[in-house]
Amino acid sequence: MTVHERTQVGIVGAGPAGLLLSHLLSLGGVDSVCVETRSRAYCESRQRAGMLESTTVELLRAVGLGDRLDAEGLEHDGIYLQFDGERHHMNFRELTGGRWITIYAQTEIVKDIIAARTAAGAAPQFEVSNTAVSALDTARPVLSYTDARGMRHVVTCDVIAGCDGFHGITRRSIPGGGLTMLAERSYPYAWLGILAAAPPSTDEVIYCRHDNGFALHSMRTPEIGRLYLQVPADEDISRWPDERIWPELATRFALPGWSLTSGPVLQKSITPMRSFVAAPMRFGNLFLAGDAAHIVPPTGAKGLNLAVADVTALATALIRLIRDGDAELTAAYSDHCLERVWRSTHLSWWMTSMLHIAPDQDQFESELQLAQLRHLVSSRTAAASLAETYTGYRPLRFDPSTRLDAARLWPSVA
Ligand code: FAD
Ligand code: DHB
Image 1 (cartoon, rainbow, N blue to C red):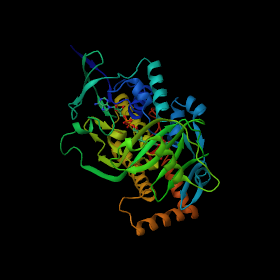
Image 2: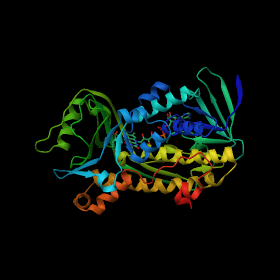
Image 3: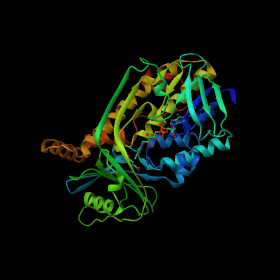
Image 4: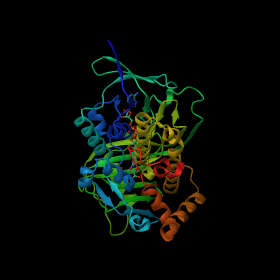
């Protein structure tokens, strides 16, 4: 059986981008339907990001999603950079005049927004199948899907938001020529990530360059550590039993007088490393946001933060369009977002290249990496530049009112 429905914004994907977009739209009085292939439990437990820019934290607080984040998030002043047997603290708060970073897992943000949408009587539709989008270049684009009970839905929308991640269907539904740029870079290594019942052995996140490869020590709570190791691209995870992971982490992070606390590995997975940008982030009345439009290697901790920035801009633009009939911000959406996307793409590529060891790396490249790292920890100007982009590019403004003009809301568009 097929039901025909109507909404203002059809949202494909209930990751951070789709969920936050539906929440922001509701604050501006715009209706949406959000559909998701996976189950709620899967979305709430998929281990991914953890590092939030202060700009992201401030936005989440401003839109009513800050309670648990403030109670349970771990606020940090900066990071450690480790190389050549030295560990240096980079104090971003001091370097930026007050900006900071917060560890609060993506799983928790997803839980918070699903709870808020459920309380508002507008929970996403989980476990849908055969999602499709059509009539994208018309004033009435259509979102179709089959719900968990087998009912087919055909939803006529004003706008569709493609928030379905890198492997989703929305970007691939854009006809040939609709995207004028597909820029991509893959890296010859991957990350093995573990979640472990091991108290963090550090007060701040450690980014470490070692001749064996990159390692990252992060955390989730005072009892749970989150750690990553550079491994070969296409690595077989069965080659990394726990008894191999902990000694390798201890070798890469080793410093005299410091030791790494190990513990049971709760979860383990391998992530490939890729940069990708599709542009423009719009085709007709389909708007792409988050990983559906761009991905970065995780070294700069930018993916989730970019997804939040995209949908903050998109929600404001769509509220103006749908509620007030003002298309100025939707016209500017793609250019506005891409400026931040390319800044973050550069940071992620640069940090990745500086900290990982390529399979064919020669001494020339190794010396360049070390020279760059030494410069970062000895030049205040270089450190301040990293601190500025790492903690957030520009403040995020969500204002569903009509009072602010575009130039004040998005200075880059003026
Ligand atoms: P996703 O989270 O991928 O959500 C897309 C959703 O769409 C998914 O739930 C998917 O199931 C659904 N979907 C797909 N196809 C369909 C369909 N046909 N119909 C319906 N639904 C569909 N970022 C940071 O900012 N900081 C970090 O510290 C950080 N660390 C990371 C560490 C790792 C190991 C990894 C892998 C990523 C990390 N990231 C980090 C990146 C971050 O996790 C992503 O950028 C973020 O998940 C993007 O959110 P999204 O909503 O755009 O996409
Ligand atoms: C985390 C992930 C990252 O990619 C990063 O750069 C920093 C921290 C994390 O999972 O905590």
